[in-house]
Length: 158
Image 1 (cartoon, rainbow, N blue to C red):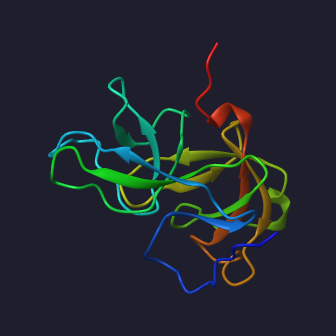
Image 2 (image 1 turned 180 degrees about the horizontal axis):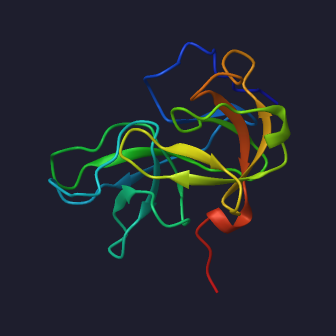
């Protein structure tokens, strides 16, 4: 069993959501929405599929994974997507000006959607839950927390 780890070099720029630990991610290729879409995404953004089955930025708690490449301006271009896993731990940043504290561990997290800068807000949701603070910048304003996605964050059928 191989573990994936973030090296901590990403402080303010780079992917907004990353796998911190867990099994090697499963990567699939999904066709992106039409060029010029207002629902564009960047490498590291949470993504979902729209009504046409095309990839768009995640915004409604029905994520399929993390984009591993930027949105293409060319129609019918596939994007690699790292599928989410309920058992893996991910790392993401809280909003600027918010300082994570140890009391947040175990609390629910809401995910705020902006292209290239998904952030996590503590409390009042079931999208994900905090399992720890990042060892390098978890106790600073806008710092990173470790989290797991909850079941309700995944695409499911009835």
